[in-house]
Length: 133
Image (cartoon, rainbow, N blue to C red; front, side, top):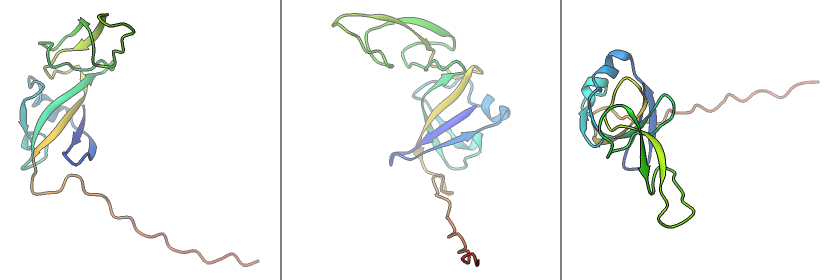
């Protein structure tokens, strides 16, 4: 499973986690806070903000359960209607994290001791001598 972790400054980081860590997230719902200790981020607390399944269908907060459902919606989730009052049927995933979720969006609620969004230091490339002809 891929985790997209973002903070209040607008920075985001994508992390791949193993199956053992992934199973600790099963059953959590959108809006719940989870401890970062269970997934390898000591001292951090995250809030589940959404995600998508392996087919790309987004999770939706107001759809209960883990399965994919076709709901009648008026707006949101990329639904641009041509006339006022129109509704369309969209496929969405429920609000509970399960093994079918491929990407999970997390938000940092409490920072840990180690910086998560540290930019790698770039070394200046060594200057090459000009070619001699």
